[in-house]
Length: 561
Image (cartoon, rainbow, N blue to C red):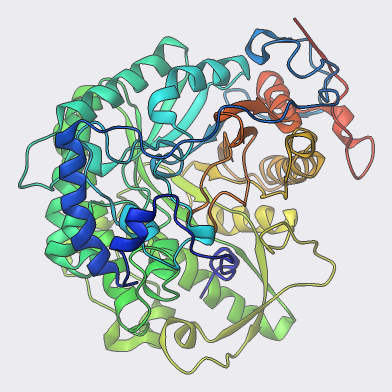
């Protein structure tokens, strides 16, 4: 089952910012790129060379008026304060956790600094033809150097909960066989400490798709169970060095997307697609075993001393049956998408529908592994962006998509976003109902939800009413799930805090509440949605003036200096 998130392929040429890298990587082979770039990483670290690339500091002056009434450039955005928010009759329960989210590779940059080694995405992005317009995360949003500024902006925008990921390549650059990197530990302790100083609670994802490339060479990545012990060593290093600053842990982000993008479509690192009938299941199995081992370490050695909770972030579309006769197919699609990972971490084994469809290609957990997986999450973390219309049967002849045996479509009444994904808020409400029913007794957190909007200029970006409407409608679905369906939804994290590199799509697909002006020294510019969402977080509810019409205008509350 391929989520709609994985179905759109990037466009564009393969132009490199650094011609010498393009020349080095004359082959599109991931392994060749890996072998060439690994020594490059060490050489640059040793030479003291830090900044590669960069952008011209002089960008066009932003004209027009800020959506909240202040001339852009007249007032420093961090010095402005929000006035009292409008009333909300769509209140969320007391203590509801509102936040924003990012990921290390997508925002940090500093790809060869601070003792960091190359990740698989560093290599993948420097391989010709892999990323739209030959873009990379070498600089990304330069969060590595600007995290103090970014945290100040979060505080200004009323953020109190922030989900981020750590780069494995900064903590154990050479895997378990090498020492912990003191520069990486220092960077993340400084970042986490700065969050605490500003009363922002960190929610830390250990793995957001960017393992050390050296481990891919050594083990063939997640195709080997050797990665289980490697990951466990990395996780323990994080628990040991950051446990006094972190109370919320996620072992993996979206393993289903890792499997489909990296081992079915080949669109994401490591770009494999030749064996879609076997490799996805092997990779998923090893990720689940790694999750279980990390959770066991956390619970046995750290949780009783420092407290905290741990889970895994799972992603899913909502599978809407096209007709009543397609209901079983829609259920099967959800089981191949979400229950593939959720069933093992709750019940200890894969869904029966997968066992029947995949047969002996689906690996088997022994009893010890089942016991370690069962209830290995303290809460249910869910990422959701879109829905699919599902019909029984598929034209696929092999692999994962043949196993699930469904056809994905879209109801013509559903609008689409800039990625081509359907916008269907009811799908989120139904997915929350499905999760609450199948996995009772677990609090649920939406750890990512958001929309890409076509924003070719700063003037267009700051007036992102489409994003406000998306958030309004999806948050309304959350409100209904809580109040009408008794779903134990306890928190919501908007994706993303800022525009970033959207993996194989490069920088063109913008999800951020904050604009990154790539023509003006990566200047941070809060969009209208950032201030609207700040109002939501401050008053713990959806502003009533968001419902004045079907296409909300920029919120009416203003800023003053």
